[in-house]
Image 1 (cartoon, rainbow, N blue to C red):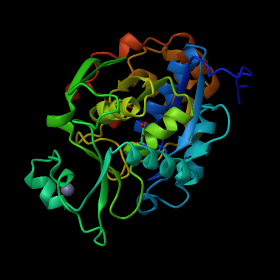
Image 2: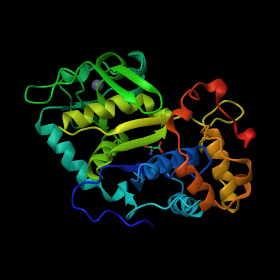
Image 3: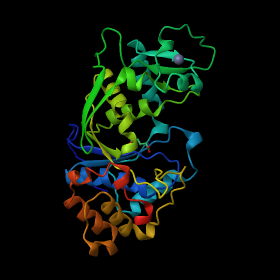
Image 4: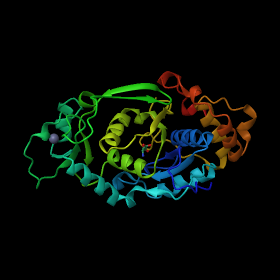
Amino acid sequence: MNATSASSLPPSYVGRFAPSPTGPLHFGSLVSALASYAHARAAGGQWLVRMEDLDPPREQPGAKDAILESLDNHGLHWDGPVVYQSQRLEAYAHTLEQLQQAGLVYPCTCTRDDLRAMGGVYDGRCRQREVDLSQPHALRLKLYDVPPGVPTLPDVCQFDDLIQGPQAQNLRLEVGDQIIKRKDGLFSYQLAVVVDDIAQHISHVVRGSDLLEVSARQIALFQLLGEKPPLYGHVPLALNTQGQKLSKQSHAPALNDGQAGANLWHALVFLNQSPPEELAQAPADEVLAWAVSHWRTPAIRGLSKPESQATTEQR
Ligand code: GLU
Ligand code: ZN
């Protein structure tokens, strides 16, 4: 493991990989891990691993250790201890309280069917409603028309994605107030990810483009909390031959750690980094060293359209 900075000031570049333990590391998650690792190391930055084990019903037994072992076998060594979201519930509760005190949180009893009838974007109807708190209810966060005293957010959240370029999303019309605590009592990913990115001083978030869609709402939460959001970069998703995202749901195969170097080489090809042919048989550490010293973010641009994405067959 690399030594962390001895300075007490937050370091200037801190990246992270934040897997959910729903299954083993597969080619798609390796692409995200490698991109965030290489982007961080090429900038001389730290690279952290955070286990997003916040949703026990979705977890696969053994997946946490399997993911960490697989990262390690691929030479993707992280700085500092792994943070487990399951150990951070107090921090989430604390931030929730802070948001409640600012008048930004309200209970919502709407169902999935209600949300579908609203066209998928929550219309804020429980903001004004008397909610019977003895009934199961979620807690939602106001993202627009916020109470006085809270930083006002522009209706349209704009940011420049490091890979996908300029982005704009209307929080009121395209996003809607977000659930931050679910009906089943679990804290939502949207809350936890921001609380942790703040606590870990994350400066750069490089991750799969399935999360491009949720970046604006995360940026908004940073702003409501008076914090500066990190920079975001979203890498294209690896798809299977049916055009589905590689995931446990689409039965993505676990990586063979015995071919770590070759897996990394294929991930570099996928990321349009043009690694030399002869590196295809090299050990993982050598492929990684090449990746860091030749890392080119602009090369990834233009890969975001599904028709130009590689499939698992090409690896
Ligand atoms: N845990 C999330 C996932 O595996 C990623 C969260 C993030 O990178 O912000 O999809
Ligand atoms: Zn509601």
